[in-house]
Image 1 (cartoon, one colour):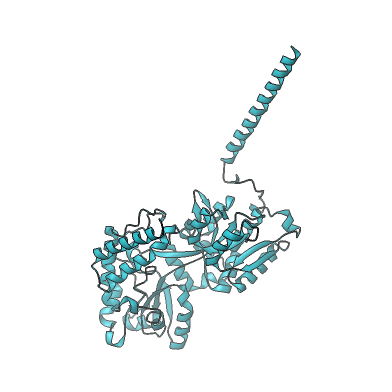
Image 2 (tube, rainbow, N blue to C red):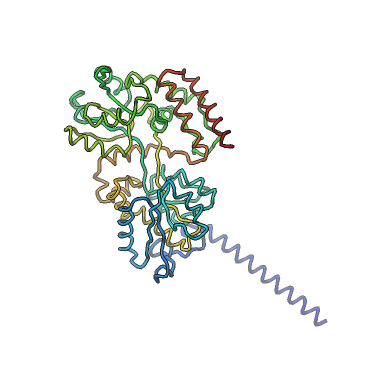
Length: 449
């Protein structure tokens, strides 16, 4: 009888413990769904600093954070700025190219030789997730939403979490020669609509003198994308993630290409002749009112403006048939390694790169445009007064990030051929669209997809 009582007592105790455990789990799950302050993980959170707690080993000097980037001046300056705020946390810098970082992390991460934080282009996010080499930013989501431009933040979002911190962004935009426009039109204000460019070209263009109203690389599938978006085209669907929605043969692409074809007289040069030499380097001579290019052309434009005595500005791409074109944007992302021994500190450092201090370092050492929204950018010393980069930023706000799905690698060449075939008059628009689809499918098959 005593054995039976003892047996039932033990069973009752076990059941009680199970119920308590389930109740505890239920309570924890309920709590985790309440409010913004609840963690998406179990890493310690510092409410005072509104960030993750840095691991004690780092604060005690028993370890360091390894950081990969490809610019020595930027690395030195960002580490100096970090140490002013976190003097006890050592950053170990290794120069690794951003386009090489993902492949190197795939090899070195699990072996414990990789970075805690590394920088890569945003199109590496998809493959990095597939390889499980990057971790989420956790509870920093609201802070990221409040600081980073939407088009850049969208490149790191996956299933409701942000995997990385966009630190810089770039997009093509419209360069315009204020001095020349004032002489030609009586105003130094840029065109707001493509029809204004077309009208000016009727009196200014002179093919014999190689004199053109506007120049751009007309065979470049990155640059030309805005012609299609003005017609409502979304590459790989609205989110840019549906490989089944290439839609090269859609009516929207047809409409965009028809307008693209119609402006050939404005810049009547075959696509293969529309190079950097015949676009950017001609604009800097001061004889071209408009240029479509990215912030990488600013250095040449500044030099040309000084040597040839003209002022210029940068602004948004003019509207097409009343619609605002959206350009491709590219972003550089700071990622936290999923293999990091110090995930809390790694996230703090990644966020620091996009802080006011971090953005100022980036801007002053590289001249790049931080991926900050207008409100945050105005707080960065010097950036708010940089009218040229502010012009790029305006267009970046009207941009769509280049899709990061693997199929994007098979997009560029077929798209380029489509534009060239239309621009050079080699194929009619719909025939060029059909061929681009066939070329794309062939590349997918050769890649085993």
